[in-house]
Image 1 (cartoon, rainbow, N blue to C red):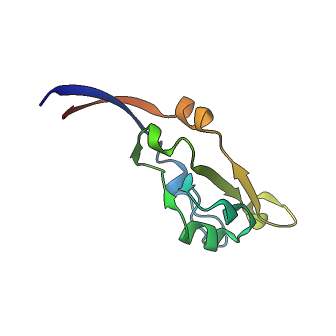
Image 2 (cartoon, helix red, strand yellow; image 1 turned 180 degrees about the horizontal axis):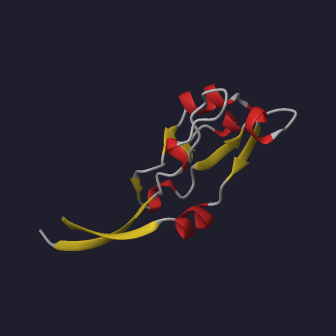
Length: 102
C-alpha cells in the first residue's frame, strides 16, 4: 500500500440553494446521458446528479456537465440548456488535495 495525493474539486453550493419562481431547483448537473440537452429541466435533472456543493474528480471529464436557464426567471421563450465545459467548471471550483491509501 502507498499513500497518495489525489486532486479533487468542490463545486460551489450557491446555485443549488436558489429556487426560481416556478420552484425548480437550479444548479450544476452531470450526466452520461447525451439526450439531456433535449429534455425538460425536470427530466434532465432526474437523469443526472447535482454537482453543486459536492466534490468530483477528473473521471467526470467526458460526462455532460450543464445547467439550465428557466424561461420564467430569465424571460426566455423556453427553458435553455447550457452546457458547461469541464475546464470552465474546474476554474470555478475549489481544488482540494485528497489523501488516500492504495
